[in-house]
Length: 444
Image (cartoon, rainbow, N blue to C red; front, side, top):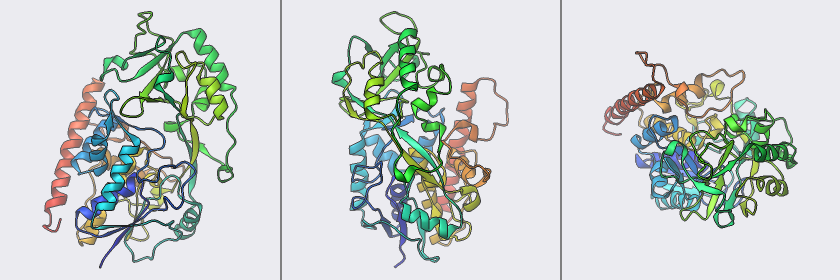
């Protein structure tokens, strides 16, 4: 019997395995947890969320919202489970991490066409074996070495950083208040307002705080990816960098003064009952004692209890434009596909999207049908185009963003209207593509 191997049970691997099995093709899913964990993962379940529990905005006129809509149209199981485990977060889609991972794991384990093998993959598969390699940003050293040897291409490393989590009950309720920026959503964010004196004191402490030493496996040259840059690194770029970034005060009025604050720190609900809160934009590699000292300078957090401190970890990705085509397929062997952050897509849903796309293309390969290139007017198609067509001289990971989409035929002055029209076009084009995908042959 023909089996498709999926290596790695992160978001990309789980999405891929479930999609392939949906079309009646047996899957062997190999995952090294719980026998072995990466430096960042702690949960034994699949599809563990590490950096944040937020999957970003639901508004279709945003890049993240459009990506969610496209994934929903393509039958994404990750989106389905995310909706089932959603926690309040304004107009963003945030999930209960443990429940999300548990339900994904349950779906995988209960599927009659998916067989899970809990062991570390230490070698590349045979040339004639169909597989999707989705080993993630923390691919084991053993398998990374085999990929470098087998693909003939050095992998690149950068670092992701996760934000700390504090308990709700430890906050000073006289100094924090509920509000969503520009009153969008249901005011599910808690806000800590700073005046200039408070911000200056916090800033000086932050830029002079001691960072944690890198582990042995991280003692190599690295690059920070701007989408997950540690807050202390961002702060050192300039005193006002944070005020124009994660601490921007625009769109929020401090009810104590009825004025806009000098800076705003936002806290996002981490679980369903709101007992845990994530410091938005505070990915960090500060020592744990330094995190407590510095972040307690934020008004309202002076007695904060840290349920989890921020951490930083390695991310490995391949030079995809040199190695992969627009189908996430290895150019030198059409039986091998790649998916997830190892391809250079950055973000949870971007990873899931790449897993789903690789799976859909692989299904047609199994059915001996021609592969269908995705319209680059769609967010999923634009991401596929980026990882296969970007410059391979200095390839860097990419989030979904409206800048990836080709311009509209008609010029539109309003930025918001332009985004809405781009989204309308993307949804229409993807719908047409998917209908063709499903109806070209009755086998699919």
